[in-house]
Image (cartoon, rainbow, N blue to C red):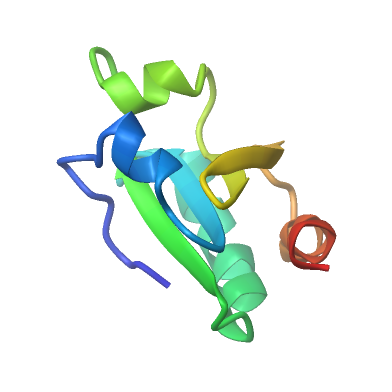
Length: 106
């Protein structure tokens, strides 16, 4: 699991070329909702060594967040081979994240 938000996000083309399952987490280090979601996200990803996790810092003018139409933080975008297959906005629990992962990785 990636711990820090990336100040410099990958390009949309780089994201689209990712192989396997990836969770893109959009948020900021100072966002209270993002901080609250971290323990559940950590638990959900702890056993999933087959899942890539990218924490992308979002905000005005951030192209990747705009490409994925991010409105609220945190937003988790689940990708399979670079294509969005699921999304969670402000996940309420680690269980919600685990259920979403199960649906993607199944």
